[in-house]
Image 1 (cartoon, rainbow, N blue to C red):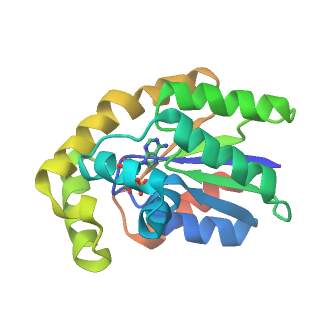
Image 2: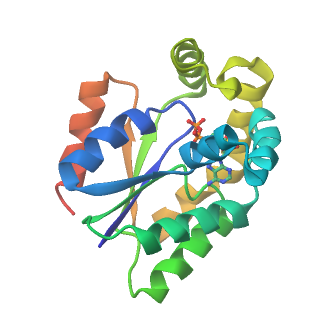
Length: 190
Ligand code: ADP
């Protein structure tokens, strides 16, 4: 099994590129953001707890998302691998992921990191707000907090994955097609 991590700041285009990646390489797309939004839409207890944190631009607790990931790993079978989108987002989550994979004698295949500057993050999120209507995309303060949360909690993972040689960065500032072909060029090597 292959275990790809799609990494990058909010608004980098992970969701857009994920669709093409899972199709081409027969992967299961696991987006923790989408799984959490489903819980919110269903009005579950977990969803209620997550909504307040997401609307504030904060992260939901590690154990919650780790549980979601592990249950996907254990239930999805007929694919060649997984594409993790929005996970891991903290060093603790990265360590937990390594532990889950080690139990299966597996490891992370590669981290595909889509990078864009902070100014572009804001523009892209605002644009998406007008199309998708996500509450956490519509509020300036929430967006600013998400960018801060990304730099504080998630960006340290770059160092974590550089150290173990899994980190590969793609310039995310081009068109959707340009970014997609760069990603395919990279993934064809694994
Ligand atoms: P974005 O496109 O802004 O990166 P996502 O759809 O991936 O957004 O996630 C939306 C929100 O869901 C995040 O801002 C965060 O509050 C929560 N979330 C998603 N994934 C995780 C995670 N791995 N750990 C903690 N919180 C998460």
